[in-house]
Amino acid sequence: MLFLSSTVSLWKGTIVADNTNRTFLYELGSLISDRISGIEGILIARTQWLYGCNRYVMQPSVSTDGKPADTLHLDEGQVRYLSPPSSELFGDASDPGGPQNEDDNIVRRR
Image (cartoon, rainbow, N blue to C red; front, side):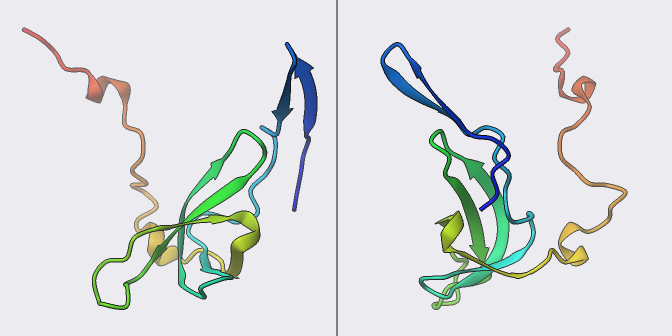
């Protein structure tokens, strides 16, 4: 696992862990699998938890009954990396989506 920095300090009798600079091992859009179940899917989200645990959200393609599958939340050590992100996942790079212009989100009252 990669760590950029990690410190632990005592504040008012409570141990405080600072793992905010820890890096993620896997890139969004990568094909991954769960080491336990063997289920494969696309890495769609990453979260970093207070005490240094990185978790990944995987979207499997379909469940065994043919319905859309629920996402799986995996600890970093549970992830098996299979391949890098495919350019097909991201579509047209000229229109990446994401946050819009602030002016577009203002509701004007008359």
